[in-house]
Image 1 (cartoon, rainbow, N blue to C red):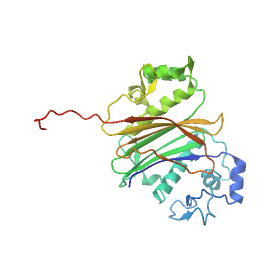
Image 2 (image 1 turned 180 degrees about the vertical axis):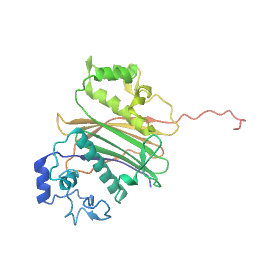
Image 3 (image 1 turned 90 degrees about the horizontal axis):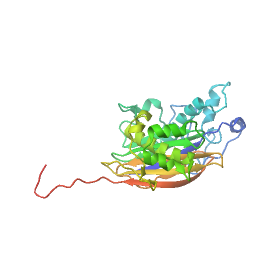
Image 4 (image 1 turned 90 degrees about the vertical axis):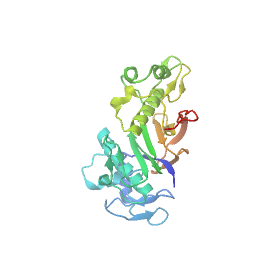
Length: 292
């Protein structure tokens, strides 16, 4: 059965929240199946409405697992630690969606390094930025998905990055009413990253990626031919005026329905879809009376 979802989780770096998680039993989401993190080889799942005594994720994610491993755990969410936590949280979300524990050893990689689960008719992709983790997950035959996430912030050299990697139409799109718009910069960046991750390419291929802006009117579009239906979606996530993110997702293949947005943390951000870009294959015209 075809299925498409985007899983999201807020990673907490709050020492008080983690300390409380050791003393209290927080209530998980009503419909959540909780993967027991104490034993990475465990197949034990708990119904969120009944027994969740081992639900030890620190308020929002599984920081509690890391806290148990070392009494010297540094709770500051540095870039490296957030990356490790986001990767672990993505595996937790993937485990819940697959209803079985999944670890790094279960994941194989294509020649270009793109991850996949062998022998499963599904595809997934992960992203993280700041204290958010995202998982794009699609179940179905011959389906591919991707996602990218960026916290909206002033970035030194953003205009220079755009000059080197964005098309002329995309660069024009960045200047809203004559001012460089950081939000629009991250919209284009995440859309292009999404395309690259869908194809198993790297950020070094970004300069050669198709444009996501069409013409001087600044309309978001995709200017490259496709062999299968592809839909890109652009979301804004907000946890407050100074805590905003841009999320882009892509789905390629027969599954073209709008994804279900699912939060796997107690904390949630407001999520608004800003754009949808649908791409359809162009069928080659074959004159009557000719054969392959």
